[in-house]
Figure 1 (tube, helix red, strand yellow):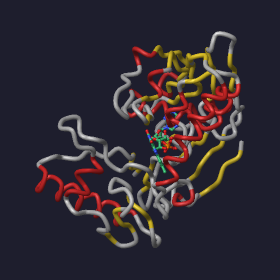
Figure 2 (tube, helix red, strand yellow; figure 1 turned 45 degrees about the vertical axis):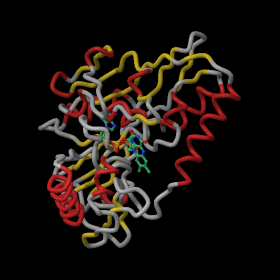
Figure 3 (cartoon, protein in one colour; figure 1 turned 180 degrees about the vertical axis):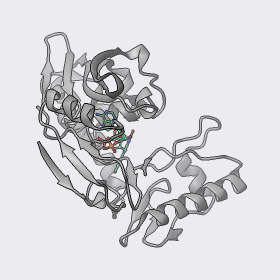
Figure 4 (cartoon, helix red, strand yellow; figure 1 turned 90 degrees about the horizontal axis):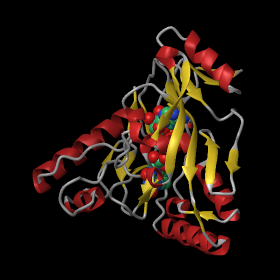
Length: 286
Ligand SMILES: Cc1cc2nc3c(=O)[nH]c(=O)nc-3n(C[C@H](O)[C@H](O)[C@H](O)COP(=O)(O)OP(=O)(O)OC[C@H]3O[C@@H](n4cnc5c(N)ncnc54)[C@H](O)[C@@H]3O)c2cc1C
């Protein structure tokens, strides 16, 4: 199995923040993955997908595991049931499904990262989310050293949340059910959704939305941050984007303390001026 000792964490996440971890493993089969996690004494690992929704601390003590080298499976049946491995890029799944005339996920086109990360985050855009199409997932449960199948009802899926954010279970693969549609129509929607994103593309490394949209009121986190005058506010090498106030841009080698400081400034100002307590969407790995 491939592994890298002392990987640089800023190279493993899209916002390019983080110091060192002891090791990152790249298992190549389910068997290798299960044996690896079972052999780790505390069974306490950090699962990393595409690293597009993560911020790492200066030092992370847990070993990292990536499913990137596992067999890449996208199996689409005649009735639109899709089996897909967790390490596959969400974009690849969306494109292959479109090619075969299976749609629904085009609303999510342009969200970076892997299927495993998208399940854990219940990623979504344009009024849709992965949960709309998810039926069940194959999960490795480290404490029992067992692979189990969890039905959708057991996944506690909600707005950018799932059961996987509250335990160390690992998504190995997912089963989705898509809708039959005209491939050209699905592809046009994919192109449109991706170009919408490009039109407000931020310049420097980032992790997408930093805060969740509040569950009450009609303002998004971005609107509140903008209203509080936070665009352009910075801490060290990290600033609140001028393009999209809920994005932080790493314009000059930002470190973890820049992130925590900028979060604190944003949280306090929005709380004082708008009376709303923002909650982080991005996952902080310490
Ligand atoms: C430019 C940009 C735009 C974005 N736009 C959107 C958007 O429109 N909508 C949206 O929802 N998100 C968006 N995001 C955030 C991010 O892309 C999504 O949350 C994505 O689904 C994360 O996938 P990932 O593979 O990168 O996960 P990672 O960032 O690697 O991990 C995220 C979480 O998932 C866990 N995880 C990863 N793989 C597994 C697994 N196999 N089993 C269990 N847990 C796992 C990790 O431990 C971590 O807690 C955006 C990010 C960027 C940089």
